[in-house]
Structure formats: structure tokens, C-alpha cells
Length: 138
Image (cartoon, rainbow, N blue to C red; front, side):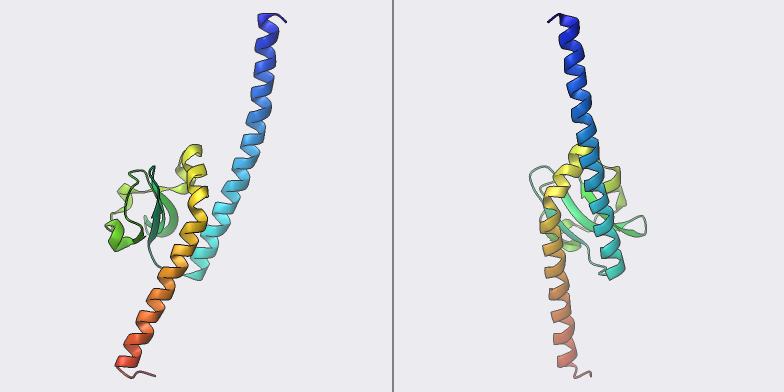
């Protein structure tokens, strides 16, 4: 096979792989949109983060809206906004604006984030219930 033939074959293979990658990425993005919509409809209102060596993924307020976001600094403590430092929107990147590589890394952390959000909500609920019992309300 000539060099031109090898080049054409390599390009054809690359284009086929890119088409598959784009389709998978759009599917992943649809999941992010669905999760973000469900969290917003639940009106949980808690900032929570999970992280790995590369970055942190969280659910936080970004420009007056609750969004799935990343913090490229990574290595932050997991937990609520207090553990994260409560930094402002300038520190965050909405997931839909992140690079494909960042979105894929965030996708791997999404199950952990949902578990952490549920745990934070349960903790807050317990705190409220305990406080109500102390002041004998209801």
C-alpha cells in the first residue's frame, strides 16, 4: 500500500472513531443535563464536592444558578461548600463549558457526587429535626 493509501486509511479510521466519540459524548452530555435538571427540580440547595487528583466536581451556585461544575484546581477536600472554601463563580467552570476530557473525568465522578449530595441532605435533615426537638417545635 502506498503512503497516500495508508494516509487515507488512517484518516478514514480516525473519522469513524471521531463519529463514535461524538455520539458517546452527546449521550453523556444528555445525562449531565438530566441530572442537573433533576437536582434543580429537587431544590436541594446544598453545595457539595467530590474530587480526585485532577479536579473537583460539584453541585454549586454559579452565576445565581445551581449547576454541575468543576474546579480545575482539584485535590480539594470533599464535602460541603465549607470544606471547599465557598469560593465564588470565578473559581468554577460549568460542566457544559468544560473540555471533553474534563467532562469524561467528571462523568466518572458523578455517582460519587450524587451519593455525597444525598448524605449531605440527610445530615442537614437530621440537624433540623434535632434542633426542632430541642426547641420543642411541632
